Image (spheres, rainbow, N blue to C red):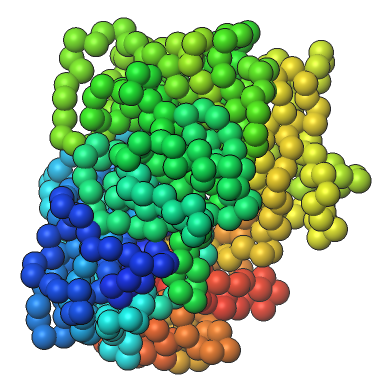
Length: 638
């Protein structure tokens, strides 16, 4: 086996493209896009549907993956091409872990859509990986070592299930841009290199259950209906209006408007007093039955962006007195259109006048609530060692802070919001309502990055090898010593541990899909399997082309594919359906049945094509060696 020099970051971005008939998008009545929205050509209301596009990312090994999504078009069966994204969107997929972003709500003609094309521009891409616990900038190159520019990816839908948009009939298309199979990373190169070949999976009428985010300026509020309407303005766009979405609220919706917290109808009433054009951000879910978007929490006004204050998002990696070190996120200057990617920790100053709130709760807390590990959004006044070279860049773009920049955010007269923080680790003990973890990561950052000095009472600072979590009334019965777990909640106040963390949600990794990744970099192999048919795909563990990765992950547990007791068998579910794709970075064919997928894969391997990587999700039985697959992608070299 070649040395472990090439990796392929595993979990992936998802583009959720919801096509709803006129009047169906976002629930209730959805108007046509406003001026400045997507230019889809002449299309009267009786002949149109509504295209709602969102983008997300799952957990992955990239610290930053910023590229320009230049356009997204759909192709009808009659050959007509419809543009759904008329403005370039600069997207850092690594910042969208666990949440989907609405990108546009475009009107499109009725009919059957058989394909789509996504144009990605890597010319100014910012891709960062972690090496020895430190962020490292990667150079993007193709297989010949040349810089990568624009890549067009044609996504062809399953022949059995085209996307049909008709008047009064909502339709849903999800596009999954998989970073695991789509990138190989050479950590031994100087500088580190990334070679992309985008593979995108498409499925029809399968809503994603993850949290969605809708951002944009306020259009109107309907108190009686419990809804409000926004012009969609995704990511860091400052002026785009990409159609309208109706946001539904409930009695349990948590609100933060201009730094003030509300719950339920009180929040909607307060929103109604704000002027049209106030910036909003809603987090919630899209119903599977009728595609209504309902918000669990809403931010508005200066709680989203402040006209007078700069802001940054990240995790506290250290604290000394009233000085915090913030890492792992982005910063925005209130008077500039660009985002700054924070490769190195940023100093944050807080004080007695700093307003501190906790997401989903009413009332303020004091600055003592801010401790190491906590994910925060900071509003204050930013300064750098040298602002002279700070340039204006294109609307909605990002750029990286130079290595020698020293950034400080003074929030002594500003605000800090404590956001839900994610832990991952292995259970080392369960006693009453306390869960003890051998902590692996906080919001995907390895614990080695955090300095827990001062987090506890004297002599009791948080210990990542014995991290104590107060689970309250949450059910811990399923957790045994040695089992992996994932938790969501808030870090204990600084100097008050133990416990070190208060959980709102605890997830047994047995309830989370296993992830499979195998690389055959760089040349690929024409014979990756010992057998291939509609019943099973059997991986050949002795194939000399296997490079890196070659593992199955379930939470923090990793199985080496080459060292399993029996060869890995990839088998279909009882329904033999799922999400499957075969692509080469420019053309991707999608399938919804395991039989169609394996038949097409067998045809590919009967000629000159070679497999250079594959990824899958499903349930893994370590006893039998069977991996029951619900989603699988194969990257070919044709």
